[in-house]
Length: 182
Image (tube, rainbow, N blue to C red; front, top):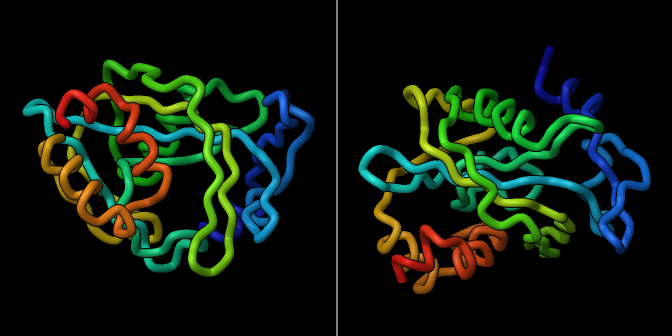
């Protein structure tokens, strides 16, 4: 099955203004110039040395292509537990598992518009965990990756916020592993 064919069948959970589920829509049709509020997640990975993984989004991505971001993002399927969705996307995007997965920012939400006009409009709980295994990134998801010290990542985000995904910039203001590095 091709990635595109899978994306056409993948569903995201649509939310109302109270953040309650109101239905589903195909992922392939959700991210437009008028994206409906929907459920997503972000995951940050750290290694044994406390470094954080940053990934550069593949150039073929619809939204924010080539931008540096956190380890992994995705959308839970309807009825899928959030932790299971995080593990599924980590396996798909990076070829790894995670241990010590913790919900760091349960109420994180954002709306942002990329240079092409594509809107992200997500209720996006943020997780942090330790990587298990060696990275085997899917090139359709990840163009590059780096392990960086949290204080260096925080300094980079402050110096060049435009080089990072808007959700990473906003999460860096709240995420304990990064705010303690500031």
